[in-house]
Image (cartoon, helix red, strand yellow):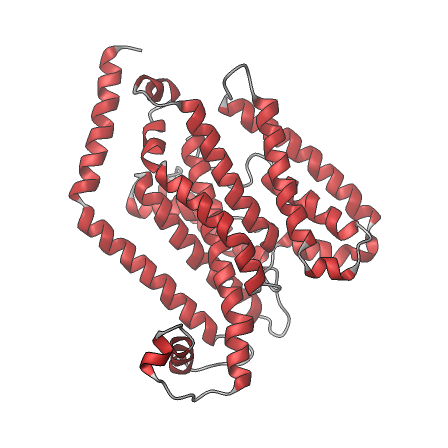
Length: 368
């Protein structure tokens, strides 16, 4: 490593930091705008369904049920108990869960893409999906009392399967005191294929539960509840916080590992932290939603195309955009063929694949 290369690396980091400080106000307005779009999407999605509700009614209902604010405003009750049950017990928790899952998958995808410096990386890259799928299928196959399923045994086994798989992949990829990204990727592919083979074998033996297993594997939020939201939210928020704290270091990592190390970055520690945080968020999301594709692939790519490559901006915007994307995908899944409900994974693939091909056609190359 020549000294001039190190200096160029420092200049690049300082320049990006200076640009971010200079653009502080537009960035704040951008965040507020996208955050406002998310809140508006939540409000509008609540009104859509088998029972249509006026936007004003939903808005007043939410305000009146907000702690402290409802007492201050003293809004009159103009809705029925049935409408309130539909909004507060069925639609709102499901919509918020869709937003949390979509945001988590998008941030994990952006993190992996930055760490691997590869725009084709997604949250399932190193075996998370295969491990979660195996854990969930084992949960369906075990002869457990029906009450256990109500306690979320499938979700916990999916979370455990995803976490254990990534831990094993990390251990297999370890070479001395380092974990080469290429080795990590290859280990993830190999172990993921092994888990998929076991999953297929278990499914073959469980013909009577084939429908419910495939519905979970295709992804869905039909069982979304306040309990599930409360279960995954701490893991998702912790994952997001860790990734955002390390956003600046992820920018430095784009130089390449050798240059980043010359700038004083502990590359191995950073890779471990990023993999752990992204895996935690993905495992939590997958445990309640099943396997939902394309969110973590196309959303970060679209964010970089629209707003640049600074990960201090890419990561939070990916969370907001991913939340909006999956929220509306789930809304389409529960309304397009109502009363029949589509797996949301089908909707994200139908929307995501053409969009991704369009980006390839427009740019002739991936934006990274």
